Length: 62
Image (cartoon, rainbow, N blue to C red):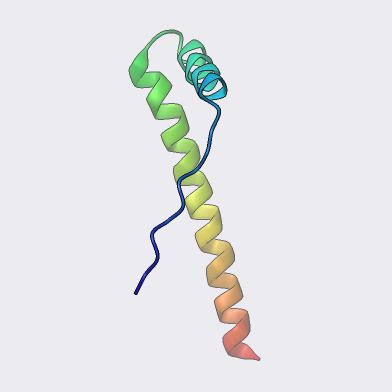
């Protein structure tokens, strides 16, 4: 049976500061503020996928 993921513990003040920072970077525009982190996440996912794929191919060749 799969185990439930452990919740991530984050200090509330630090999280609030991060939200304020993202809104500030977006110039107060919430759409821009949300778009930035989402694009960053997509880029990270793409890079990770390429690393995992390369590792998988390398493993199959040996």
